[in-house]
Structures are given as structure tokens and as C-alpha cells.
Length: 373
Image 1 (cartoon, rainbow, N blue to C red):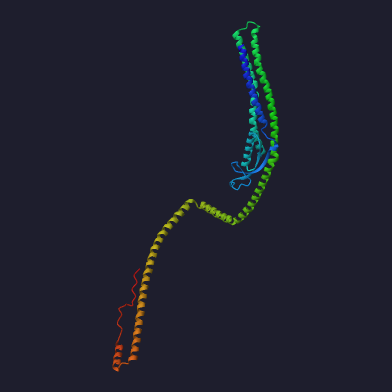
Image 2 (cartoon, rainbow, N blue to C red):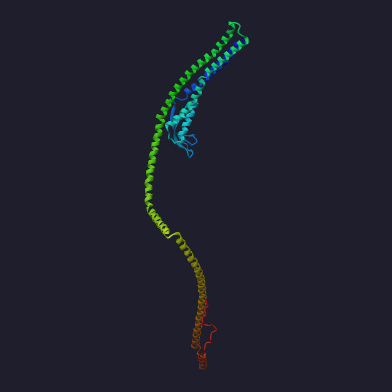
């Protein structure tokens, strides 16, 4: 009797675990079937976003300088799993500035759904395994009872068979819940596939045409920019043609020089350089002598300037002396006219004037001899 009670308790625990696992599987299957929203709940919006993914108002006056417009997916009242799909998809669209590949968008969606599918599939067969575990435990407990009580008659096998029957109940419940779980998962997969196809249709019909049109416009703008660049580049190349011709001539001269240098030989070139350096050294010595000569010439010019100034001073003094003599003659004539002196005085005066000679001047009219250079 004790073994039967233990088997009932074990089977009850096993069945409780089976029911709990089945409920978890059904909840996960429900989440899987509701992963994608309906097509009407999805929309495409052109939003002003930052590189960090923050949505800004359409006409934000304080928008950052690095913000830009991009077409993103918006949906309301969606599951957490699909919210992650939208965030990843919008991040892909944001970082690619509106350019998108359908295979990448599909891969982003399928990875998230695959996680939920794997979680559901992992728990579908768990009730069956628990039922087999309960069956084995029931059989083991029955065999333990037989071993403990012994087999005296046919009635001794009754508890054992009763325990096996109870244990088989756990296997039956496990098999039943496994079948029900498979059905729930299959229905969830059908709903998932349908909703997933609707989502892919939405991407191909609503999102990709806008992105492709934006890409076509971008390519047209790129073509216009490249055409303008080509025209401007050609004009600039035409301007540089004379410079390029000059550079070509310089290159030819350098090539001829190198060719001639190879013909002459580096030894002769080195000898010529040594000779040039010797001439330069001699020229340096001669230039030093020339500098000394130039300094002496400058000294001679300074001495000549001093001599010229002395001669000019002597000439100025001679001119002053001449003016003084002229003034003395004028004064004598005026005195003779106005005072009319006596004949004796006039004769004496005339004799004095006749015998007067100017004393030799103490100023030498001879210019000073120039100092030898």
C-alpha cells in the first residue's frame, strides 16, 4: 500500500510538471504566432533622426548639425520581439542613409523569429519525457515492493500492476500533452508564416520602392556632380598644359644632363668639381684682396673730400679779402670828393697811396698737400 501511495505522489508530481511545461509551450507558441503585427499596423515615416537613433520633430529648430532625414518603419501596439526587429531594421536604415537590401532586412527579421521557434521546439517533447520518467519510477517502486514483500500468491502482484498502471497514466498524460503541444506549435507556425509573409510584402511594396527612388535620385545627383567635375577638371587641365609642357622640357633637360653625366663618367665629374672648388678658393682669396683695395679707395675718397673742403674754405677767405679791398677803395674816393683837403694834404695823401702796398697775407693760398694714400 505504501508503494502505491508513493507512486500516486510521484505521478501527481510528474503530471503537474507536464501540465506546467505544456502551459509554457502554449504561451511561447502564442507569442510566436503574435510576433508580427497585421499589415495595417505598419507604416513608413520620413523622420529627422540623429546618428544615435533619436527621433526629432519634423521641424526642429535646435536639431543637431549631423541630423538627417531617413525613411523608417513605425508600428504601434506590437510585441516585444517585433519591437526589437523594428529597432534593428531602423538602425540598419539609419546607418545606411536610406539604402537597403531586402535580403538583409529579411535576415534581421528571421533571426529574431528563429530564437522564439527554438525556444518553443525545445519544450514540445518535454511532457513525454516526464511521463516516461514517471512510468519508470512507478515500475521501480513496484519492483521494490515485490522485493520487500515477496511473491506468495497471485494477489501479491496486484500492487505491482496497480503501480504500473498509475505510472502509465503519467506516460499517457505526457503523450497527450505532447500531441496537443505539437498542434499548438503547428498552428503558431502557420500564423507566424502568414504574418511574416505579410511583413515581407510590406517591405517590398511600401519601403523598398521609396528607398530605391531615393537611391535613383542620389545616383542622378552623383552623375550631375561627376559631369560638372569632369568639365571643370578638363578646363583646369587645359590651363595647366603650358605648365606641363615646361615641366616636360625640364625633365628632358634633366634626362639629357644625366645622360651626359653617364657619358662623361663620375670620375671626370668629380675631378671637374674639385677643379671648380679650387677656382672658387682662389676667387675667394682674390675677393679678399679686392675688399682691401676697396677699403683703401674709400679712405682716399674721404681724404680727397677733406682736401676739397679745405680748398673751399681758403677760396671763401680770398673772396672776403677781395671784398674788403674793394670797400677800402670806395671809401677813399668818397673822402676826396666831400672834404676837399688842401693841396699839400692831397699830395701827401696821394704819395702815401702811391707808395702803399698790401702786406703779405698770413693766409697761405697754396692748398695743402694731399696726404699720400
